[in-house]
Image 1: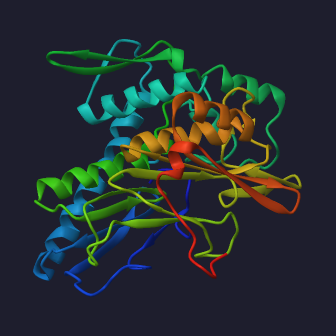
Image 2 (image 1 turned 135 degrees about the horizontal axis):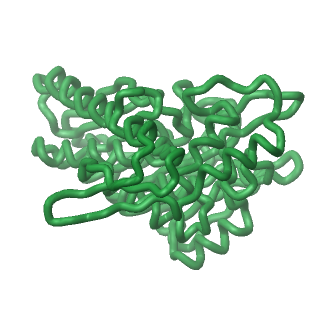
Length: 349
């Protein structure tokens, strides 16, 4: 399995199935669930006959298992692991899916000034959030410097040709980790599967990445909620109507461990080589695809509140940030995000 931003116990996006909707003329509703990539997947459908449930469950799981077998850094025989293990600096043939996800990641990485870096794997592993075990003691300066020397987006490129696509690295030890965008990619892949199967009303999610199309069983737009940055499940911070878009949240408040008396966040800053320590605890992005949202939320989390705000404005992103100020949480949203926001109903927090 892969190391993802949201663990099995918690998801940063809550699916609102019927809250506040007119249920006078409901259509058939179906919910399918399972596990993949170290997290959970969920598919909510409207207007699909119940007799298709078993076949759909199997088809979805097969596709996600195939994605995991291609993108996992936990499986030594995955396509990505084979690329990482190879010391060959010549172009290596890869699937169209792999080329697409790396191309998107490199673009977002460049626009975030390297804050979103899919080559940060050696640092992720050093701090114990990859396939390796957690360190016994805090990594020292020399260990961090050695890991950083093996990273950098400038060492990876995608080659496209009429007869295929390739990945190439110019550092033998370069280690690509796609876990930070894998949930978004898999979510988009589920959406494409639904369309191929003739299903037009759905909400699909893998971990903290969600995408919707059409209407729910109450013939209303799909709605989701952003969780408050606490350990309390189902605590709602804000509600949004996706309007056919993808959404993803990256947070620093649940995936962590204690080491030498300090809380170690899973969000690693590629520039410092260390886990983030700033006050931004959650970044949510809405974009045309879940992959796009999943890439941007990671970069914004690394940057911290003020830099994330500035980049969201510059790039015209739909962004919702939650920062900790003293004992309180303070939220901020970009103008683009406000267009998706559902006003709180009377009596809601």
